[in-house]
Amino acid sequence: MNTNSNIYTIIYTTVLVVIVAAILAIVASALKPRQTANVELEQMKSIMLAANIGETNGQPDKKADFKKLYDQHITDTFVIDENGNKVQGVDAFHVDLKSQYNAIKNGGKLTLPVYKCKLDNGEEVTVLPCYGAGLWGAIWGYLSVKADGQTLQGAMFAHASETPGLGGEIAEPWFYNQFDGKTLADAAGAFSSVKIVKGGAGNDRNGVDAISGATITSRSLQNTIEQWMNYYKQILGE
Amino acid sequence: MEKDTYLKPLFKGNPITVLVLGICSSLAVTVQLKGALVMALSVTLVTAFSSLFISLLRNTIPNRVRIIVQLVVVAMFVILIDQALKAFSYDTSKMLSVYIGLIITNCIIMGRIEAFALGNKPWPSFVDGAFNGLGYGMILIIVAFFRELFGSGTLLGFQIIPQSWYIENGGWYANNGLMILPPMALILLGCVVWIHRSIDKELQEQ
Image (cartoon, rainbow over the protein chains, first blue to last red):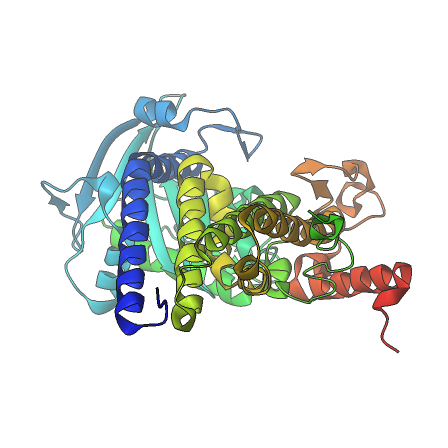
């Protein structure tokens, strides 16, 4: 058979591509539930770590079952619009933060998720997400605010593709644990977002140390937090 | 099967240090040993099975579209591995991010298919692919070993350098920040090539 004829080439490539596509489609749909479960577990883990649940000495517990912890501690979830009013009928856990980030930039309608979380000592904290652009790709995270609406219980950040060892350090416990106990208010009590300070923040009530060598990631994270907290401040402390 | 089929890719014909293929990913995924191990395993599986598959089809592939056919087969295996990692080892998949998908652009795979699998029987092609993947992985692991040990003081995430040595804890030691940046991977790789050539004098140019 002439394997170089046009007809043969067309039939050969078509059959091959159809077979490969079928294999990939079957595998992808078979693995889909597991992959979605992994992504959701990751989100639950982030929310829990932001509230300092499932941590020992600031390090995430390797063996903790974050799904169980999430079910135990989260008492209520809801979404708010840009004016701080509750929106009915939207599942907070499945809100796509990226689309909210785009809506914030373009001034569209917002549905911002809020998680109410009960700590082991009975205290109630509010866990709030944020999402923005880092140096190379997306950065996101969660902040947990105590009932006074100012004091941070904790924070947790993650990134898609920041430089390992530099910008990537925002996802490391030493960095995000600095947020524990900081406040979202200045000395007079007015709202003031967290500052990520170059050269050491010391005991600044709303400053944390920036990462040396990662100026842009540090600055983007500061802006991202401020941008989102500007909406959330409307419901804090209520 | 000749001994060369599996010995050559490891030493005299090592894809990274001699053929200088697959440099890009070897700089990107060698910050930590765990990433390097998963990458080595993934590349080995992809080269082995795409070589086997192409070798089985070698007499039927239309010559004019053979590169496209190879690409489709390689891409299929890469996506399978990517999907499997996302489902069964989410943490590693997150750590390696785009680099698993980029295995498809790794020159070693297409190189071995073009140079070997198209003209040889399936079993030798499989072995050739597998050992080229292992030769690549071996260099990755050597580089990652030094980068993780001196860059983070850990190996596979376990602390190796005693905490009490660190300056923060009153010691004299600090991690080398340059180790975790890609340029240092290139320098280390250069050292590996240098050592390899001084042991194996046949590789030195006149």
